[in-house]
Image 1 (cartoon, one colour):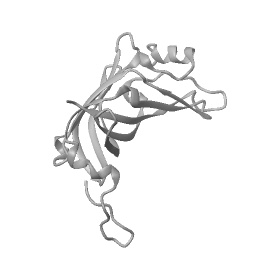
Image 2 (cartoon, helix red, strand yellow):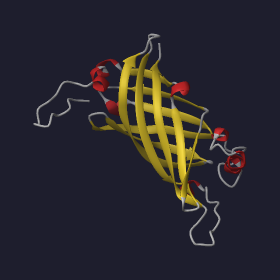
Image 3 (tube, one colour):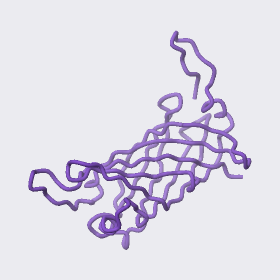
Image 4 (cartoon, one colour):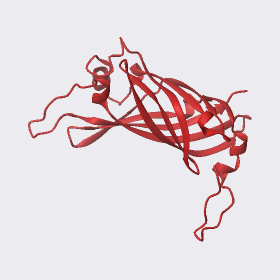
Length: 199
């Protein structure tokens, strides 16, 4: 964490998101009510289908002085996928895609954290979907930290991860008469996280 640079190259005062960083080291629980885990993918080569996983839990340890000592674990209920269309959601829960009966959770466990910019942290970790685990890296931007009206210390982060679903054996598809496929292999997972300091 550091000073932002003014246009003339000089250091400016810490901004609101950075000013409290000296105080945010500790253990956190993800606030499900104020966090969104979204997903989006191209459909029929034309439109983007958006959805979310509303059921999940997560914990994090933040270490401001030594970001490499930070860590995060996130567990998502695969069956909670919600794209606003019941038949599509049922198909996504089936063995063609997430196979939620045999693989009820999507799990991310960090293996490393490094600071790559003033408020940006690259979190590397193991992502397990449908029983397969692969290493991924997500750049999270610290969007703020504050004490809320209830006395909770909160931090916020945003990040996005592009994956190829075929890497996790999510290979179902259908060819289009005009060429291309019904569902893109590339899927974007979006994180808008609010976490509350324990204690």
